[in-house]
Amino acid sequence: MSETSTTERPVHHLGDRQPIRHIAVCIDRSPIGDRALPHAAVVARAFDARLTLLHVLEPTHDGLRVALTDPLDWEVQRTEAQRHLEGLRSGYVGVEPGGAELTNVVAEVLEGRPAESIRHWVRSHDVDLTVLSSHGERGRTDWALASTARKLVEGVQGSVLLVPARPPAKSSEGAAMYRRVLVPLDGSARAESSLAVADRIARSEGSELLLLHVVPTPPHPCPGPLDDQERDLDRRLVDRNVRAATVYLQGVARRLEGDGIRVQTEVVVDADVRDEIQHRIDLDDVDLVVLAGHGHGGRARQPVGSVARLLIEHVTAPLFIVRESSQPDPPDGPDARTRAGVRLPHATDG
Image 1 (tube, rainbow, N blue to C red):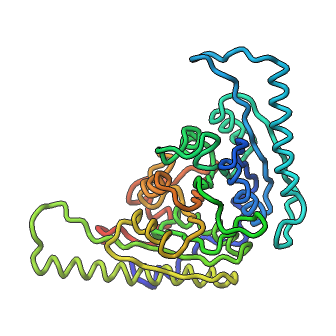
Image 2: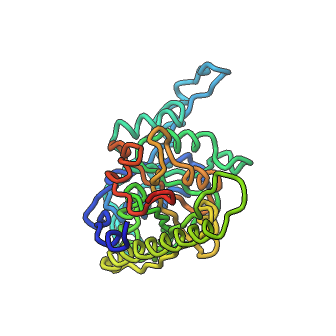
Image 3: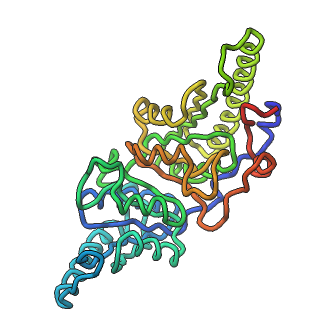
């Protein structure tokens, strides 16, 4: 594939798309869990989306059975939960810092097991994005995610915004601020689905977007040293892919800059994309990572691909995983890569 063909292909665009219409944020009435709300409010403002605050009242369990609960005590718990949600909701209705309005904010108290109840509610209410903290009322643990968070990330419909259990992002009067947003791209149409989200957030927040592409070195499945001709072939292939990736990112950047967004691009060679994303989060002081749940190598059977999975397991910055609510992923296979609009070939492609 030539560099010219890379620039001629249209990037999924951008400002006219509305991938987020309804947002649900999980609230467990703990200081850590409630940190997800400012992030949900920022995204709701960017997309002018409905925002629902969800809290689940979980019955006491005696082993595998639900223990008997005094009806009066249960009603008191429900009233307290509703009052807590209404207090949070009232702080986000009306004029937000920066002058924008959130007018469509509601609160819902559910009953049952948290993960199962939220998953069912999200599916039945056409939620496009679920926002949650990595941990909740039990605090941080030795595990990357609390059990409920893990079940939701793996099983909830649509996109997920995962907020790490640490002090909130840089803020102004309580609103999470995304000054720098990292967007990893592998050249596939799947990965580009994150651009519509990053574009809207950047325009709303005045964020700078950092576009990252990692060029792998060609694999060598057979053991033994390479001869001079093979090493030269490796070098030429890597150089070619670096040029194609640079042209590709520059084309994406021009379209984003047309929306008035500040953009930086970075092409890195011979790095593990997962390690490089983690490195960039620290090096560039990244406030948010936006990436597709699957890239060109993703499998629809899995809730997320290997890159997203590792970031989930080592979440150090808010992580926005873009997934389609209803549209299936493109089919797998070499021909499917072309139909899916992959911009860059695999290292082994001709």
